Length: 423
Ligand code: ARG
Ligand code: ZN
Image 1 (cartoon, helix red, strand yellow):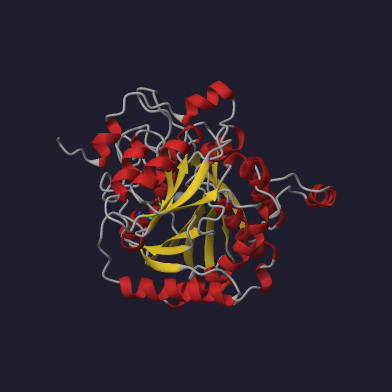
Image 2: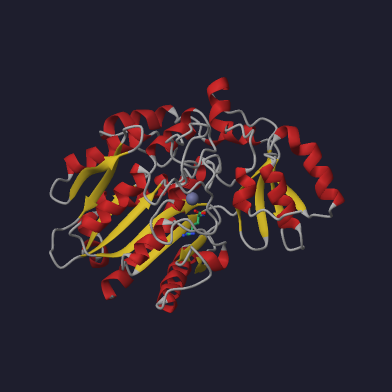
């Protein structure tokens, strides 16, 4: 039999029922009975089995590296997949035995006291809950209004569905400053990412005069939600949506993976030409309004960008280019040093352990990532940070994690700032 590439095999499935279509039918995708398994991939042939089950739409892959992969097993498939794994002697652990239960418990409403405090503050943002885009944008606008001397907010474009892409800038206005661009929420379901980026914003904004010189002498640009359409969709329709919400030309499926759509070696490994795939790269580089807006903004800004950080989840990794294939840039040693210094700082707060390395080296090759593009633009320190956890909750990280995760991440960011100023 002829061997198909991953991509060709993806395209070969005629009857893919997208989760979007399910969502329309049911109003909200229900994950009752769906499970998440951590599967060891050390043994030969396991990846092939995983690929097969994925193309049959019995499982979806969540995250993984070279020794394991976390997979979501569809409720109707649990029995079958269990049988296949047992027969093939594939090692796995059930991490989540009823995904919908976890989703229901993830983001409870705030208690009365918190709601009262919220009403007094002039914005509704907290780090005790995952918030809708309206609360996030209300918070950014509030800061611009409250601290006009150092903070401004502008929309750098619109999402496919017409939502603003709001960037908040914090600066003391010194012309000699270097600049750092930080984004979050490229992937809709990674809720801890916008929560963490807004935490940084809050800390810097509310405390700017008392910050270290390393922080004050940088022009900070924050785009907490690159993919607002997808983000809202995860709140209203499908908690596990990853891509943006632009329909494919044939409209049979929705969404492009924005982290496969950036124009550096676009179209290569780890990206799909199938619009129904979760890693659909789009019809061409920068075909999507969200990735296009980010790239235009960075290219055209007068700012002297020395670092680009993009926050994702999950896995606890600090990753540097390249992502498109197994190669590293000439200055990889210095990227590795900075990444390790950040990881050390995070851990020294009593925090989590991060793995540092190149994306392709520690994870898998995936072309079209924003980090590769930023590095290709000559931005010295380009990192993808995969926040917590390592798979116990995965994307469905309870709200009690927001503060500790964001806090330890800030320790890492401070180290990055010191390197930016030294460069
Ligand atoms: N989890 C991220 C993704 O799959 C990692 C991206 C790393 N960067 C890269 N250019 N491959 O999108
Ligand atoms: Zn991501």
